[in-house]
Length: 329
Length: 255
Image (cartoon, rainbow over all chains, first blue to last red; front, side):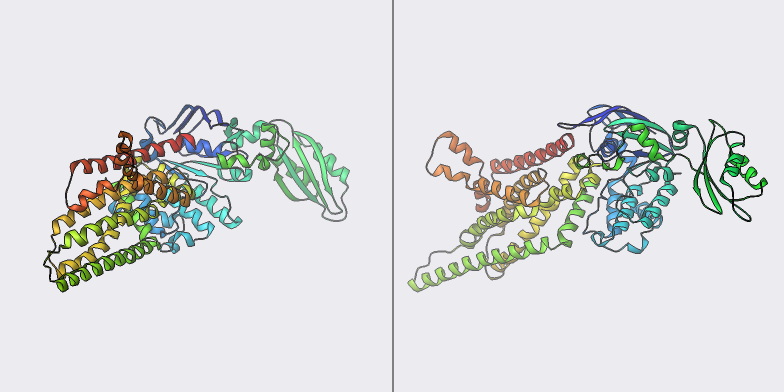
C-alpha cells in the first residue's frame, strides 16, 4: 500500500531524512517511532505530498507522490501534529468543508459527516465553534476530518500528543477500531503506545532507519529469551528462599533464577528461560506441586524502550534528543 | 470550479463570522459618507451662489459629484485592501491549516482563485455602500447612469489588481501585520509613483508612471472604457495571482 525507496529530504542546512526505505501492507497499523527531530514529521509530509522529496521515491496505493499527487491526496487522510482547524467554524460546518475539498457532495457528504461524528464521538459538539473545543475534542475532530472521505491510508502525526490519560486511551481505541478499513501510519515518540496500538514498527533516529519489523518479532529478535516473573507465597509459615529457588531452577528450560523481592510470606523471582524455550506452564506446575501458592505469573517481555535504546545504541533516554529540530522539520 | 467555490464560501464565512467584514464595512460607509456629504454640500452651495449671481451655467451631477467621488473611492479602497487580504494566507500558515489545503486533492490555483474571489466579493460589498449614496442622486436628480457603471467596472478592476498583489504578499509571511503593512506600502507606492511625471519627462519616468494604478482609473471615472487600461488591470491581476501560485509552490520546496 505504501512503498518508500531511498527517501531523502534535505532542508537548507540539515538532512532531515536520509535514505529511508520501508513498505507497509494493506490494513496494517504501523508505528513510526523515533525521538523528537528524528524525521517522522518530514517523512509523513512527503507521503502526504506536502513536501517534495529531495531524492528517492515514495508511492501510495501505487501512485507516486511527485508524479500523481492528486491521486495520492485523494487516497490519504492526514492529521498533522496540530489539528488543522479553523477556530471560527462550527464542527459540522468544518467537516462539510473538508468533505467537499476531498470531493464528496450531496447525500453522501451528509452521510459521511454523520458517520464520522458518531465514529469519533463528537456528536455532542456538532454545533460548537472549533475554537471553543477542548484539546481532546479538537484532536477527535482532527481525526474525523482525516477519515471523512474514507481514505485507504491514514497518516496520523502524534495523534495522542498533549492529551490526558483518559483521552489517550480513547484515541488509541479509536485508532485501533479504524484499522480494519484503513492502512494506518502513526508517529509517536512514546514507546508503550506502539506496543499497545501497532502491529508493525518502523524506528528511525536522526533521519536514518534503525529497524523495521513487527512488534512481536522485534521483541523476540533482540533476545529470543522468555523472561517470567513469578510470585510465590507459602500456605503456612515462612518460605525458605533457597528451597524455592532451587526447585525453580530444576524446571526444564530454565536458565537463571533471581530472587528479586524476598519477604516472609512472599517471594518474587525473575526467571530467564533458555533460548527458544517456553517455561511458564512448567513453572506453575512446579510451584503448585511443591505445595506453595502461585500468586502471580507474568511474562515480563522486553519492553520496546529497551529495544529502542539497544538499537539506537544511545544511553540517553530517547525523549530528550534535540527537541529544537522538530519545530524546523 | 467546484473547489474554487467551496474555498470562496469558506473564506466569505470567515470574513462575515468574525468582526472583520463588519468593521471594514462600517468604516468604509462612514468615510465615504463623509466624502459624499462634503462634496454634495459644496455642490449645493455652488448652485445657490450661481442663482444669487443670476448665472445659468449648467450644473452636472456626473461631472461634479460622481466623477470626483469615484476617484475618491479608488483612493479609499487603497487603504482598505491590505486589511482584506492580509489574513488570506498568513493566517493559514500560522495556524497550520495550510497543511489541510495542501494535502487535499485540490489544485493550487483553485485555492488561490477561491481566496481572491472571496476578497473581491468583500470589496464589492464595500462598493455597494457607495451605491446607496449615489442612489440619492438618482432619487433627487437625473444623472447619467452609464458612466457610473463604467466607474464601478474600473473600481472592481483596480480592486482586483490590488487584491491580487495583497494575496501574493500574504503568502510570503506567517504574520498578518507584516502582510498588511507590506501590502499597504506597496499599494501606496503604486499610487504615488505617477508624481515623478510632475518634474521629469524622460522615458523612464513615463514608464514608471504607467505603473500607477490610479492614473489608469481616470478614464473609467470619466465613463470611458479604454482597452489599454482594461488590459493593464487584467494583466496585473494575472501577474499577481501567478506570483501567488509560484510562491505557494516554493513554500513546499523551501519550508
